[in-house]
Structure formats: C-alpha cells, structure tokens
Image 1 (cartoon, rainbow, N blue to C red):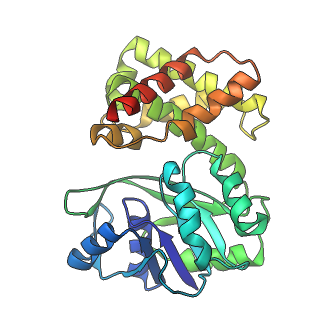
Image 2 (cartoon, rainbow, N blue to C red):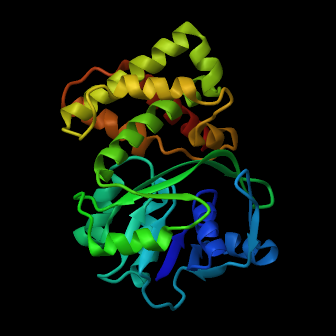
Length: 305
C-alpha cells in the first residue's frame, strides 16, 4: 500500500520515518522550505528507541502523482484548510485518511471535503520536536499512534491497515472505540496545554503548587462538563483519571502548545479551547478557567502580530 504523510515535521516525520525504516512505500507531502532541508540533510530521527536516517520520497503540492491508499494527516489545526486543498489530487474514494490532529472539530471538515467513508479516526501520543537543523528529536518512551473506524467496526480495510503498520519501530494500535479515544485525548491535551501555557511552566512545578494543582483539576472538570453537554462519548470519571495521569508525568513535561509559544509560533487555541468555549456558551456552562486559558492564548497571538 502507498502511504502519503502530510507534513514531515516532528510527528509526521517521526511516524513516517519509522514506516520508511520498516521498508514501506512512503511519500511526504511537504512545503518547499522543508523539501530543500530534507534534500540536503535527509530525514533524521534521534530517539530513545533508536536513531535512523533515510532519504525520503518527497512531493510538493501540485506535482503530478496518482492517489494514495493511506494518508496520515499530521499538521496543526490552523493548516487544515490549506492541507485539504493540497490533498485533493492525491485522494480517491478508496483512500483511507487518518488524521492525527488534536481536538475533534477537524473531523467534520475532513468529512465535508472527502466523504464520510474516507475519514478514519486517529490520534497519537508522542513528545517530539524539530531541532535547528530539522532533525526530529524524540526523548520519551511513548510513541503511540492509535487508529480505527469511527463507527467501531473491525472492517477488512482496517485489518489491512493494521497489518501495514505492524512490526514498525513505533506503537501502532487498532482501536474499536476511536471516537471515545479522540474525545479523551482532546480533554487531556486541552487541559495540559492550557495550564502549561498559562503558567509558562512544565507540568511538574504546576502540580506541586496547591493552587496550580487545584486549577488543573478544576479545568479538567470544566472540560468534562462541556463535553457531557454535547453528548461526547466520555467516561464519567474522566477528570479523575486524567488528573492521575498528569501526576504520573515526568516533572519536566511540556505541552506542544507551550513549546510553540516559546518559539513564538501560532497556537491551536481556537481549535482546542475555543471550540469548547463555543459549546459552553451554547449550553450556558460556566467555564472561568477555560476562559482565562483562552484569553491568555489569544493575547499572546495578538502580540505576535
């Protein structure tokens, strides 16, 4: 099967690189600047799971190429509209699109663009970044990609995809409940990115302060309340489960949003916190901490301009 990775950054470059390492037929759809960088230095991964280097197959938007069997969409939410336009020539009715974006609202946009059947569910858990020369640096044990049919069925095509991903030096896991998995990830990353960006600190120092711990717990409860109002398929004790998970994280763990702010990059505030705030207002749910988090991010973005 032919695989197209949209983006060769920290996430797409890592999982795509591991598939290249395995010997799969992988092409990266990239921007001109990243293409030049990869042509000069190759695709490089430095990881606790083993380093790798490869000469990747690259594709620029608009170049001729037949449709792919599988698309892994590893971009930021604010790049989604451009990515959809770039993707259209390379997607057929048989293409399986696996989005790895945080949040949930991108699913509707992808379905509108490519059809209900083409869009699978997907998410990942990984801590990666690009260093100054474009090398992908992955330093924690977790490198998990989770995928599945959004209706929970174990179809023939999803079994083929599972076989394609097997024996890769990363964890590719088939889920029979991917919708719940995506909503749970959405809750977790919205809270983690919210408090770490608000306090400009890793999770360790935040949870060690009583006020920081309480604010994190309260934010998780606010998020869960909103999600229940929109009938999201989440567990009733999700805030407690996710707070415990945050207590177990490494002391120096940062969210990708916090790292983006440190680099003066845009954030996914509208896609993550903003979407939930819209739903909170619709359902008249009080979310003071979520408002504070969102205000902090939007003020930061305004100052970037």
